[in-house]
Image (tube, rainbow, N blue to C red; front, side):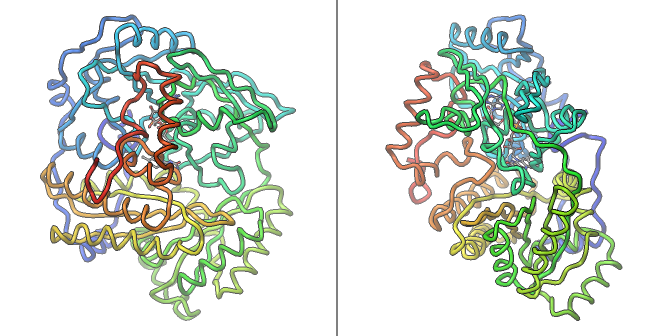
Length: 539
Ligand SMILES: Cc1cc2nc3c(=O)[nH]c(=O)nc-3n(C[C@H](O)[C@H](O)[C@H](O)COP(=O)(O)OP(=O)(O)OC[C@H]3O[C@@H](n4cnc5c(N)ncnc54)[C@H](O)[C@@H]3O)c2cc1C
């Protein structure tokens, strides 16, 4: 059964060793385990639904709670402390585009706000219910998950947009194909969610981001249906797919998506390399992407993340031996771990890895074989369960991410970590921050930072701390010329910082487009567009 107030399946537990807990306590102090709110108690607080009855709409309190929030830290605070601000008045589970249209017509007739719901894995407040007086309907796409058509010759697959990652891959793999889109939230996120939040998978170096994979589809908007034909390429004016990508439920509901699929690779390898310091590691990965090596993945951890991953991995004896060996080879405290992958036919994989290792050696990289890469692959969707374990120990975990050009990557990483540290220091709290480059491009990289800090046991205090930290790091990203999101999207949490990169005229253009598709302004209000922030004040 899916956990109602945390990540994933509630029968899955990711354990933390006593050494790992000691490591955290040393860094930021001992956590104080908290008592979680109880679902039944929370259900008792759910107000009466204000919706006119409809055969497709459930007003069951538990369903309404389960569709009220996503997976951001403020969402978790509400769920775990049992302080849920607002819940939808009902949840609908349409089975096809016609039922979606019927629900949108119902919403227009009764002036109901609509929040499309995919897998509910948003970490940017995409599902937040605005403080409006109108009733709110959550439309879940989870019953729309069939593979409708596979065109083998063109390597195009058309799916209903509510299909979850594992289900989508299983349907393709049965026919010898893969989409190759593996966000860390793969287990519970949907194809529709990926498209409208512009998501990025861990092997995007080979397969591309979702914007390269999304070839066309069908979108139901309040003002009518949009059909986006799948061309190999087109010069026929602005591309409407670009409006749907990143639209975050503001235009309508994506009901079908045609995606570019690939034959399953013959072979896939993931290797580990250690570098003595950040500068040499960054120079090595930059040379790999700028040489356009056909790698599937590059993931470079900074010294703090490298130390943290080794400390949390357990296997203290083995790690001790590894660290001794690395020290002997010149990789000490400042060492950085690179995981790199290649997929394809055997000969290409072998050649690619050989060339990547050559470039790594130029920068004093020390290769440690496939063991760490295999471990990473095994745990790639399991590690997120650590969020639950850490919470149980009294620790909160949050992440931010951006992308910037190479000359500012290192500066951005340091500035984001420092901004978070300073923000919590004002409250006398320490924060443990660490960073990796998660997606690499010839032009630059995404900078992905994780924060771990102690929970206070008081909802308002924890929320205030999070807000202060989030604002500090978002301002830092904007000031250093990064995008406010490389992959998590904008939602309501990043909306105040969007104007910095789109400009006032750009924001106005977006507003106009949304109001053409949704003249009554019912679709997911408060996301993407809001008033900008200046000096910490929302104007
Ligand atoms: C632990 C964890 C790890 C993550 N890792 C990654 C990662 O590696 N890469 C990455 O890119 N993201 C990642 N994310 C973020 C998140 O998983 C993505 O943003 C994902 O694309 C959201 O998909 P979803 O189906 O869960 O959408 P939801 O969270 O349900 O919705 C997100 C937004 O999309 C809208 N929406 C959903 N479906 C539709 C539809 N069919 N039509 C119109 N609007 C729709 C919703 O209204 C909302 O605005 C992670 C999140 C978590 C919690």
